[in-house]
Image: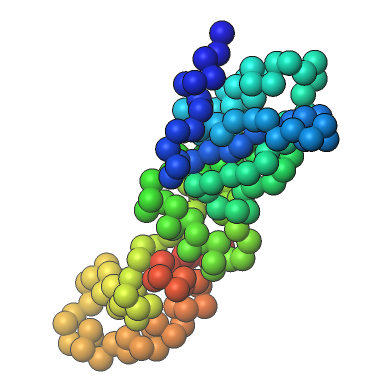
Length: 182
């Protein structure tokens, strides 16, 4: 038996979805509950709570009437298991991964829901730098060190030209994240 009180969102700054049903709404009622997404283990658990909340209906059609604590692009009124799981996966990320994911989406278009595989984003992320030139200088220094280039060669190396050419293979977000293009 599910205790709804364990899943009710009580913190006004929490992460949750207000869930009613279309039948109740069409009958003039907005009865539902804010479900704390941090209290459910997965999307199946979320919908078990929804079914318990609306067990007075034989086959409830859930209506996500409001949301808070996650990006708007994840939300829509008729969210399904995959939609809710994407939200849960997103909120499970730490702040650094969320920032990196948002920077990735800025560089390549779309929104955070497009990046299903955070591992791919991490793999393509070269780091966060003050400028692209800083990144290119680091890459050049590493390349020269690998080649065991004599010191006099490094004095004549054209770092600016190297950065200009390197830019064709990378994308840079406004907050300095650099991603390797495919």
